[in-house]
Length: 178
Image (cartoon, rainbow, N blue to C red; front, top):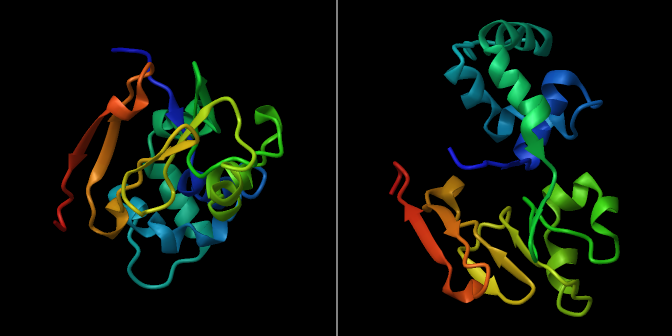
């Protein structure tokens, strides 16, 4: 297999916050209502009736393979830099160096990033999701590849042309709801 690097987004961060407590992720209290209930069901944790968080965590911990837990703990990167491209889930704060970004900016940012990246450009093009507006090229500043899959849109993959990003190839797969 080719080298694969996995990025961490707000849902993975919510999961880690919920599963391990705030020490490993943030906004955990929102995870169950943002897809976490489906994840639990996929691992065979019954969500019928009222379950306390400790009981759900206990069941999920028993049913989730160690390899999956290790993946969430060790394989997810907050940001990835390749050549002149930075891959993040949400956005960045153009006022901060890349190694000084907050997880809030990297996983959740939308408006400040979009509003300031043109007036405070950085050397790299940011490739991100987290904003379900469809694929949007705003070169040389950013490329949004969120095509609203969560709302029934397609799932998008970008085959990046590093020398000429506007000629990158997009692959889109319809979801079950389409």
